Length: 173
Ligand SMILES: [Zn+2]
Ligand SMILES: [Zn+2]
Image (cartoon, rainbow, N blue to C red; front, side, top):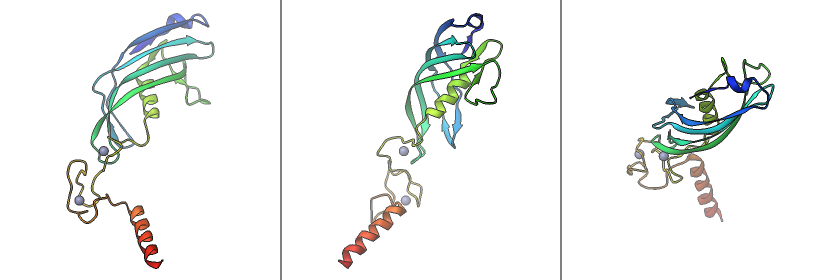
């Protein structure tokens, strides 16, 4: 999705609206795969504010993320706003400034970067995800393995230490 801003570059204060579908490319982020099965819907406007061109947009869609616990893919509802500034060339002093070339704004790279910055750091297929068994790798959402047969809580070493602490403390009392 390319926005031609040649008309608004002529005059400070002029603006234009845009809307449409933005085809996203599958990518990898922090080691997780991210897939886009449908384009994002993007609606916004660009304003020539003098030194920069200001772009506001609302973005909606769906992305398929990878669960950080069980590594299974899951659908994530995309719904966020962006507000960015653009210049005709890179600004050494401001790395957040985007660049347009030949009076054209390519929304793909802008939306991809802003989308990744907006992603939750803790990505889970569900809040209740049980993750993988740390011993045999079984997806504990789908089946139980025999590793934790004595203790059906997934083992977390930090909690195991705490549990020992409380058990021992009770004995001492
Ligand atoms: Zn999961
Ligand atoms: Zn297991």
